[in-house]
Length: 118
Image (cartoon, rainbow, N blue to C red; front, side, top):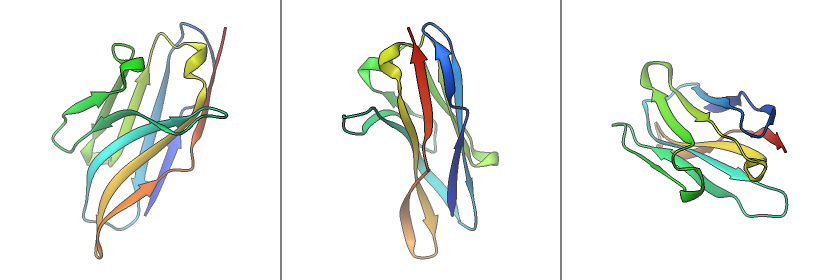
């Protein structure tokens, strides 16, 4: 099982980006999917979370600016980021709880860099 992120890049403050996280491999289903980020010198933090039924929650710092969604048919989660600020600069990681033959396992993507210039 692999999680592959895409969509990062360099954007000016106030701009938008959309990140994607696609799960591939052999598995029975995907439980919750989340986006985390880690800025240089800081701990990894939860940005947004979505369960299989669609309920979401967000870090206070991104509420109203970021939207997490998922396409269960494509085994993909998205993070639409708007009104980006320089403090959003970080490596963004996708995380998912995926049901495999051994049970529910936690998977991480390789990360995608988001850089917001002022």
